[in-house]
Image (cartoon, each protein chain N blue to C red):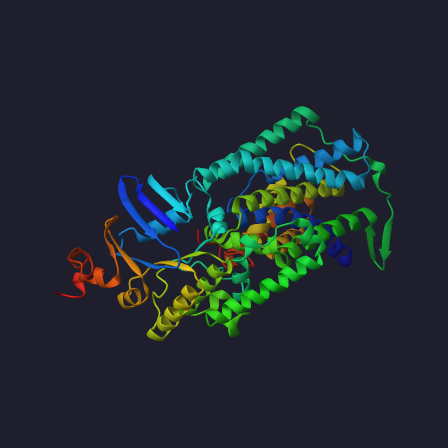
Amino acid sequence: MLKLEGLSRQFGGVRALDDVTLTVHPEQVYGLIGPNGAGKTTVFNLVTGLFPPTGGLLEFDGRSLQGVPPHRIAQRGIARTFQNIRLFQEMTLIDNVIVGMHAHLPYHFWDLLLRTPAFREAERRARARALQLLHRVGLGTLCEELAGNLSYGNQRKLEIARALASRPRLLLLDEPVAGMNATEKNEIMALIRSLRQDRLTVFMIEHDMRFVMGLCDTVAVLNFGRIIAEGKPAEIQANPAVIEAYLGQEEPA
Amino acid sequence: MFAQQIVNAISLGSVYALFALGFTLVFGILGVINLSHGGIFMVGAYAALLLLTRFEIPFWAALPLAMLAAGLLGLAIDLLILKQLRKRGAPHLMPMIATIGAAILMTSLSQGLFGSETRRFPLDLFDQESFSWGPVTIPVLQAGITALSVLLMLLMVWVLKRTRIGQALRAVAESPKAASLLGIPVERLFHLTSFVAAALGGAAGILIGLSFDAISPFMGQPMLHKGIAAIILGGLGDVRGAVLGGLFLGAAEVFAVTVLSSEYRDALSFGLLFLVLLWRPQGLFGASATRSA
């Protein structure tokens, strides 16, 4: 579904990513882990078109993402959340989610000005679906609250609801449970499992090992911009190179 | 007397507000200060003058056509200057300097094409009647100018608050990056904003030209200063703030002329601006002029 081949990115003289090759298959939950500064978020930024790679190939559904602007990539079916939350703080929860639907809503001036019955119907359905998504992430009762007033954990949930609003086929989650307590983590875990049952493909970056190991079908480890291991969670946990690079600090052998 | 001054203040202030609204839209959504907005304002007035005198088009048709011309000029500035700078990730001062250049170019071209002397709209354009209402006299022209400014502002607020494009624009204003990742065509909305803001600026030019009965190639610069004052006063990028900032400035000018004399008009109104900023540096409505990239 998503294919990265020999992908690299340099910032000035610094090689943030070096020859990264990985494939996310449909309906998989794919985890990307690695120490801080390994280049994980850079992978997401390249996939979503925020900046171009300096080398290598990037393909989604067999079509190149080279030179495609971010909003077109979003329209092709890739949605993401951010490590540092990027909600529209001054909008209500429901408006945040509706903004996420823009990729698929009509943009005709005459519809706006004339408020045709079809347009009203589309608006009504957009609101209904936004509310449904908010309920799905457990924020249904707060729908008219301003996003800026939410707790940190709830802001992360809202980001997921907003990302889902565009009906993505691939969802990129950048540290979805950072700063959450154990209860919230379990809620997100259940949510991601239910998303997989709806045949959504999830590609996530996460530091919480229990979370990653409990959810992911495949895990890749990035260290200093290179993939040093890829495999099933159990294999990764047993891989000496990974333990040395990353897990070693937490699980002295 | 006092009631009359209030009417005058609202009338002048509403045109300032209209000018400031376009100015603040560009800042709020594109994140740049477009210093050619005064030039666009002037070009709008000349476009209307040309349509009225050279082509003898009636005013009701000349106004939207001149707004269209001003809007297209704004779009051209976005495509030729601002977009090029965006693509290069140019720092904030660059679009300011570049748009100063565009404004100077517009002023010089107008001087060359139309001459430096002050021009006026055809006198017989409107009847010189007035409404009287107790002690207050409102010339029909002044009432029309005020009504038109208010109408255009209400239309903009409605678009921003109640329509989907408005919602997308608010999203872009908060974070262009997040908006683009949600599938919002940010560049297209930048073009649209530049067009609409310039059309509003052009309309303000026509209305000021009518209200002071004077059009000159140099009318843009002082208006630009007032526009900057109004949006700083209201809080940068805030639509309500721009409208209230414009009204405040209009009121300050009218009262300065009444209380002192017209020579002190700008000194007093900008002095007031300074005092307000000492008290509220973020402007009357600005939460803060920051946004996440």
